[in-house]
Length: 95
Image (cartoon, rainbow, N blue to C red; front, side):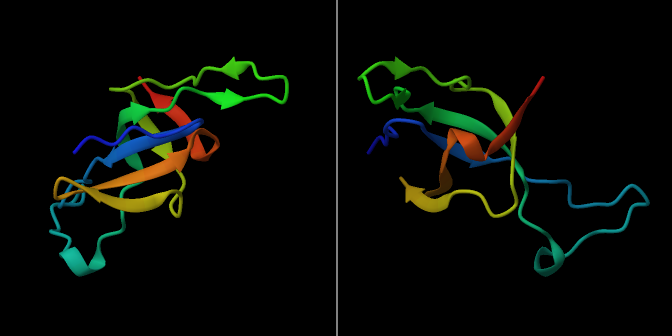
């Protein structure tokens, strides 16, 4: 099953953070925070204005992004946990 977001929505795969701190301490799963970095899997066509024109999104599939801690809605696609969010929830693209 493939999922293609509509309008100004983006499908994102979280990028897991390191399991060790800089000092070498291993962080248990129960103490980890959800990562706020991800990779764009797919994007919608863009937002529609009242006059019917479509504004394309600034992100594309494959971009590494930074998003808010509580952004998006978790969905499960082919057994994989992904996030679907509006483009406005994305804070920036990581080069």
